[in-house]
Length: 138
Image 1 (cartoon, helix red, strand yellow):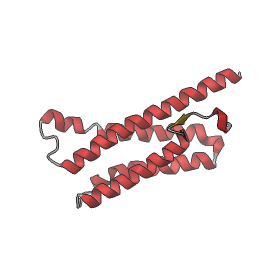
Image 2: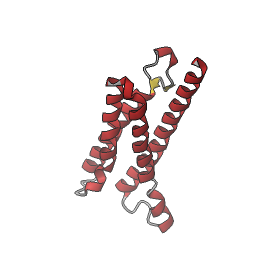
Image 3: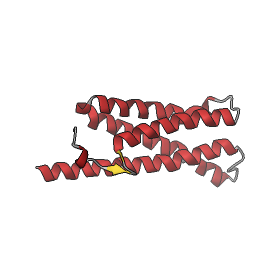
């Protein structure tokens, strides 16, 4: 699955793997930042970081081990989906009428939801691109 540079899907100038690495770093940083800003003593404020660690790690591993890139990136998108689903919890507060009662938690959920959806979109576009490239070669 080690394709040439000209045959790689790119989003904002980044390959899907590099975008995944940056997304993982973003989630790790976001969780730490929100925990610090909100003075949270709750482990739940670190959920973005807990999701970002495997995204970052598996993305790095997919660069190191290109033979396992397809498998690793499919696992990465599962964590991206979990990020979006975890962030979708803001809808519960919206429906219950207590959205933004805990501003930092709700902002974090919205950010996780939006960025998780964007990440899944980029990964799916990458997978579709790779499938088309493989079909055109065969």
